Length: 367
Image (cartoon, rainbow, N blue to C red; front, side, top):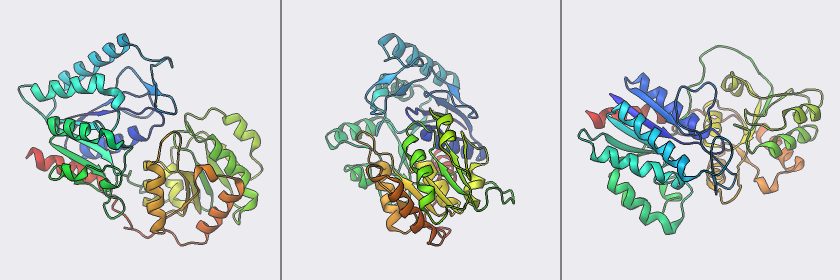
């Protein structure tokens, strides 16, 4: 059983990380997966790399591999590469991340891809993969549903409806009835190694690091104001961090600044508290690690997805939230002290079996 899985990350690498976790679960379930990635290359991920595209922070401008606005020639080259890769894979399942519920700027290649798949002699199962909450404009929902109904067989929503139903961010969800399937959240399995690495540390992270500079600076400044000031603080700036040297220069004794750690999830399980942005992957890995946590949702432009999910989880007592606009050393320190005084999240607080359940659903539909 062959799966062709399309994913496009534009700013951070969260979409690629979630897709890679799903791809790994599919392979464990016996699928042969081609993971076609259209974002900037990221070390450590096994993908079929398309000509890379990225975006400005407001998601208004699509940029090529040199950081320049894309033109028609680039779009044609990219579309041809994608269609050729799909034809060579000859999959039983076409799995597309987010579109048509997002990635509207990629229509130039995704509509031709969907058309090729739909019209092929051996039409594959066509499935959309989305997180629990999306950025949706009500005036476009009818167009989105029309596109989905025309091309897709199923919608995998990677969330727990006890926390957030898809209708929280997509008003036309009722029109998807019969094709919408909740999988639970997608989170990487924790390492099984019995290790106390990072025990007792405060772990500060900014995901890929593309938009986390203010959080990292504020965390370093907040440390002396917290009840955890005597602990070691480990600050992970991210692979896209622009000012690693500056962060290291501003770090006081007891603060370790690094770009990234391969043992991040192990340290997350052992830390006394996590401070991070509120991207889907980081939040779910934090819950899986049962770590006390403070999150600062990214709210640039019109982004609201991280804020809504973090708020819903905070209402369940699973983490503390500091809004980006209110982030100061004092507000962050107060949230850290509140989180440190609470018990760790209980296991099973949310459904984290999304990767395995997605593979089970695809197998069932093919059978």
